[in-house]
Structure formats: C-alpha cells, structure tokens
Length: 463
Length: 161
Image (tube, rainbow over all chains, first blue to last red; front, side, top):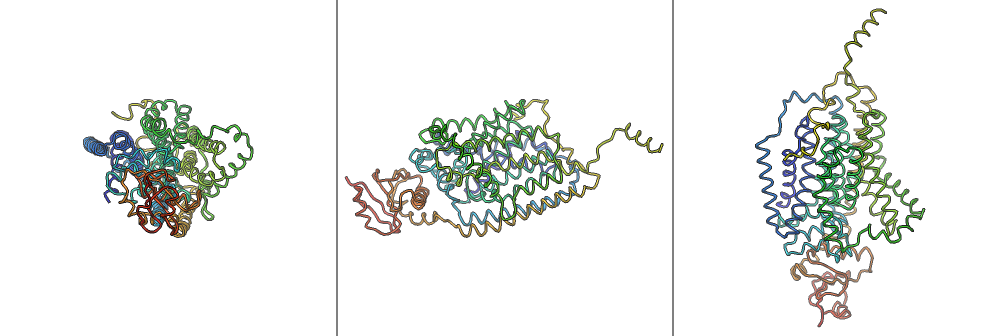
C-alpha cells in the first residue's frame, strides 16, 4: 500500500502547484475549476515527479535526494497555498445549471462507474498488464527501481535487442519511482497510474470544453470519451498510450484556455512519454506559432525542461539502440514509391476507425447526433483550425511512419494502429466539440439595443 | 514566480464565469433536447457494450502468456543469482516463436534488474525449458556445467573452464 501512497502523492503535489502557480483557480464555477486543477495537477504532478526521479534518483544515483527534494517541494508549495488560499467565490456567483446538464451529468457518472468496472476486470485478469506493459514499460520500471546501481540497463542495447530500450521513460520512471520509494513491486502502481491518467484526460477535456463551450458540452465531451470502447480497452493495459492521449488533450485544452506555459509543459511531457510525443511536440509548437503566435514563446519555455530531458536521453543515453526513424532511412525512397503500401495503410486506417466501435455502437455516432442537433459555430473557426491542424498533422505523421517503416507493414499496422488512434481520438473529439454551438446558446436571450426595441414597438402600434 | 509572467496582458484568457454558465431564460428547442438526451443514451449504450465485451474478453484472456506463473517458477533462481548479474539464456522453444519471446521476456521481467541475453556467452546461463530433458548433456553442448536444477524446466548453468 505504501507504493500506492507514492502514486497518489504526485497528484496532490501537482494540484497544489497548479493552484499556486497558475490562475486556473480563478475559473468559475467551482466544479469546472476543480476538474481543471485535478486534470492539470494529476498529469502534471506525475510528469514532474517522473522527471525529478530520473534526474536525481537514476542519473545522479541518489534515491534519498529525489525523495527529499520532492517532499520539500510538496511542503513548500502546500505552505504557499495555505498562505495564499485559493479564491473562494460566493455561491451566488455560480449561476444555476442549465436544464440539460443533469441529464448529461447523470449519464457521465454512470459511464464512469462502468469504466471503473471495465478497468477492474482488466486488472484482475492481467495484473502485470498486457504484453507491452511487462515486456517494455514495467520491465524498464523494474530496472529503474533497482537499488543495485543498474538502472542504466533500462536503456541498454542488450535490452534494446529484444524490446524498445530507446523509448522515452516518463511512465517507466514514474512507476519505478513508486516502486523504489515504496520498497515494493506492487502491481497496483502501474494499474492506478493508468487510471489516474484516464481520469485526468476526462477532467481536462470536460473542464476545458465547459469553459469554452458551456457546461452541457463540457459534460458531454467527458461522456463521449468515457464511453469510447477502444479507449476503455487501453486503460487497464498499463501501456503509455493513455498517458500520451492525456498529455495531447491536456496541451490542447490548456492552449485553448490561453495557458501557454502549462500547455507547453504538457507537450514536453508528451515528448518524454513516447516517441509519438516528440512528433506531437513539434506539431504543437508549429501550430502554436501559426495560429497563436503570441503564445509561442511561452509554450516553448514550458516545453523546454521535459523536452531537454527527452533529447538528452535520446542523444546521449540510448543512442546505442536502433531507432525506427534511423532504421527507416535506408530504402525509404523505394518504400515511398510503392503505391501498394499507401493502399494497405489507407485501408488499415479505415478499418482502425471502424474498429473503434463495440457491437453496433461507434463513438462517432454521438458526434454526428450532436452536430445535427446543435450545428457548428462559425466564430470558433480559428480554434477549430488550431486543434484540427494538430490532430490532422499527427495522423498524417503516423501515416508517413507506416509508409516508411522497414518492418513488416502488416504486422506493424496490426500491433500498433489501434493504439495510435486512441492517442489522437481525444484531440479529434475536442476539435469537434470546440466547433459545436453550445445548447445554452439556443436559450440565451440576446440583449437587444433599446432603439431597436422602441422602433419595433412603434411599427406594431402603427399597424 | 507566476507562470502567467510569460503571457501578455492583452491576450484574453478564460477566467471567471463564462457567459455560457449564466442562467437561461428560454425553453430549449426540441432538437437540442433530443440531441443531448440521445447522445447521453448512445454513450451509455457504448459503456454497457464495452463493459459486457471486456468482461468476457478479459476472462478469456487472463494472463495468456503466464507471466504471473513465472514469478513462482523463477522464485528460487532469484535468490541464487545476484542482482547485478548478466545472464545468458537457453531455451527449447522454437526460435522467433511467440512462446520463445514470451518465455524470454517473461523471465527478463521477473529477473530484472538481472539482465538476460539470448545465447550462452555469459559465465552464468539460465535454462528456461518447456519440457523435461537431459539438461546436463544439453549444457555440455554449449560448454556449460549444470549448477542447479530448480524444477519446472528452470536450471542454472555455469561456464566450464
């Protein structure tokens, strides 16, 4: 159970840091504020403690320094929050919730309860996770948690010959940290970590959309994500895809809420989570530079620390391992010119999108119904273009990787495409929701200038 | 230092109460009510479908590569080999097969931080076999001496000098 404590303590640390150093605490109403603080704090806290453990516990070899630093940071930030409490608004400031809100909120609570049961079944059946969990992520966490000074085996070329020792280490480092601090290799830690990331993803999406597009759409976006079958399937697998999806969605939401530093921090953590996160970081910063030029520098500043760790790891530590990108270079022109590969990949992408369904239910149905009922809002075109460009470029990047891969294409598609779609799916859902007209807009009485009112009244009286 | 120092004052930020959070004064159009209710029902349907499918799927795919059993099989070996050791690995599973990969990676997962490398090029080599055999004779073929048989197809070889 002590391992569980160390898995939950970063959530507290992250939430306190968000309260202390960001102004998300100024957002109202309270439930939206709490969702955003929890979402940003949980995922941010896990990312931060993973980095601290990697630097102090693994690279500098001092587990004690890593733990003391973390606890000192927790005490300092808790004191800061205590000294400067979160602003408390009068309850009257939070206006009454619209009529449709309870319908969507009740459904969300039920969907989350079912998601928890679904995940529980997965953990009970496979406590060590699915193949990649024990063959890559948790295996490397066991090396990082070792007290014998052999943590560098987590990226050893010997390991790289049989598994992906070149993958970034945010998840493995976090799980290894909990195991090392807790002196126990409990399977609860990776299971709970996956669940926290899932909850943070839901919270960030709900909170962000609630601010941008109203409370009903905020709850509905959470509902759509919490009931996406392929996403639910990945939660208990203990892979890095749900954490990555959380960082993708979090960076996007925070950028849309005009918190570029926090958004950049999330994009940096994505780069430290998985190779696809490096692509996301580049795409995210490019999209910010194009669509939100004023925020670009702040986003870069936020991304820098975690991106620097990821780059150092790739360039200096794990360079003895084969990278998919470098392996793809020889013969790339030949593979690029084979039209059959394009057909195979396009067909696989189509099948992958269809396979996100469970039985007759496909999550796209919900988006179609909402688009038909609410229509899209024109004034959100720029935000939709920003998030849509990120999602589309990511998919295009994944498409290109499949075209150029030197590995067996069919095998690679079969073993990875469904997970890549899970990573991008929340970004695509958020894009759709950002563009929708909120239900509240249909019932908000627009203020009419007095002149117009009196003219209309005059015309009526003349008739 | 506030994170906000990086952000320009002129950039509008979403703080306070969004206009969309304020009270409403007109009844919802029927299409909007129908849309939201339908989406709520659709999503709940998806949740129930997923729950039903995953319950069966997970029951049928409970630890398919027997990772949990490796902790029992390799338990005695854990105490016999130091944590810093680098070990070779011999198996009778057909090379490149799923069984071969699952046995090797499963053993690596359980034995970490000990590092496994396929082949017999180390002073200590573990034998991870699917069926009983004359392990001593098998080891001799690779210049190895059988140090200990832990049962269940798990043995430890040492280099013969």
